[in-house]
Length: 415
Image (cartoon, rainbow, N blue to C red; front, side):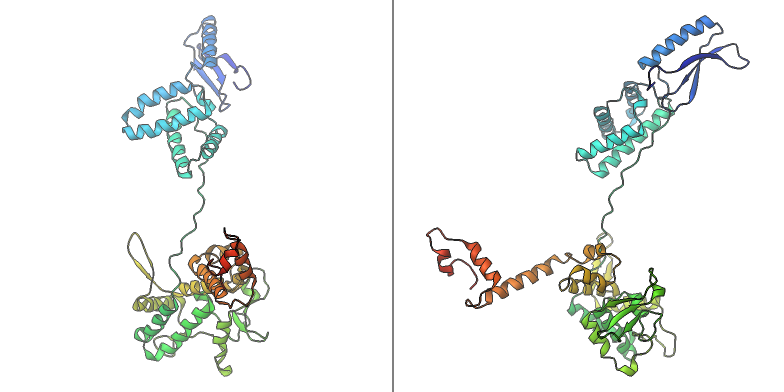
């Protein structure tokens, strides 16, 4: 029917004297048939003519050729009449939008391509993605019903819009220095005074390094085949062996100066084996697994009372952990170095990760730095000129009485 008059013809089924009308469904391309109810050819030809006229004028409610008004009328009577008024209003809003935007004459007009256009128009009109998804759900239900009562041959494929992934809010925050000191203070209470020194060393290493927990537990002084500290290059570096890298090449990365100073406090004769050796409960046991370390750190965090997140639904509290120390490290260095440098310090795979989680996240801290710089500029003696001072003075302009900012004394210009 898209290319002119549909192909329609008479035929007799095998071993049957009755004539049938056969035609090609324009939507599916399948050959369908309808009985004429007569064995007389002339009578069948007359019914063929009537059927052709009905098909062309939309009066035949066959698959893909039922008219849109017929569908709306039957759907209202058979389905919507049993729904609550609020639901009926929602569905009518959707179908009215389809009618307004696509102007379908027959059900076969609702192809996948046309529905895609419908979605695009809704989006152009400022509809939210959630609203569009709701519209499509109601439309799909209506078209599925139309198929069930043979007003449509098949439900067109409706591609639901994918919602943009929302950035997950971190379930935690960076502890302050005071809070970190509180955590260190409770270590002996949780694990005992004999083991406290090794655990304090471990915690301080996490704080100054920004290492992930697994990285810290697998950091070595003297294993070239493992994550290790390289002290042969002048400044201490972090060496990642080729075996642990996707590119199969050794990689050297910078470490924070505070962490380097922390490491160099370890006497040379003790720089063997793992850098961090949090002691297990009984001496002589194998090094603690990451699972046990996490459990013990959870106890220490809870004992300290340093809460870094509260679930808004359940009220469950999350206490400071290793990853929160990494956040603190990232926040500190985000104010000191450019993003590409921070990316290497954090060992992120992409600059996007660094930008998303650290650069610009601590807006208040950044504002503090800006204001501190401004206050320092204001405190400079008047005789000392600076680009900032000159810029501030120039932007004040000339006051209404012709004197420049009332000799700058009353104009608020630093100096």
